[in-house]
Image 1 (cartoon, one colour):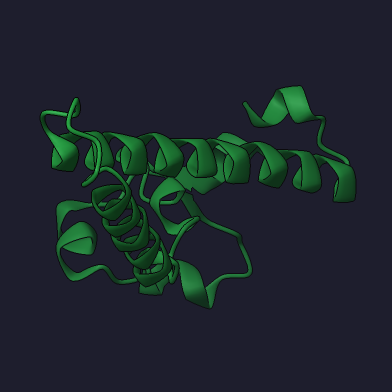
Image 2: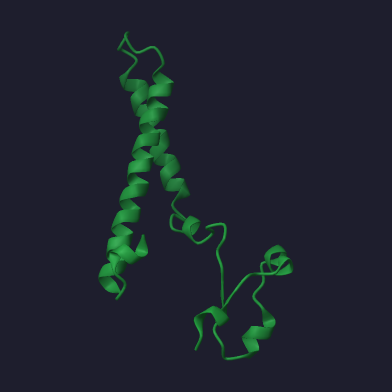
Length: 115
């Protein structure tokens, strides 16, 4: 089997309708599409959007409440949003790192290959 033979570009009609190629489903050949826009990467946190939103609300509310007594803080909201952003980025990085490590541990792929 020649792998480049099975890696195809989606036609504009397949991208528009988001459909699988019917001609290749009848054959016993595998087919893979190139992911030019990184659509696969955006599915890693799918279903956790509400959890991250609630985490951001809790962080911003906590920072807003705790910095009310502090007179030296000029913009409490900007500080709270910045802290929520930093914590979100840290959690995204941690989930990606641990996910790659777990994937390389349970498959034959090396962790350097997954970068």
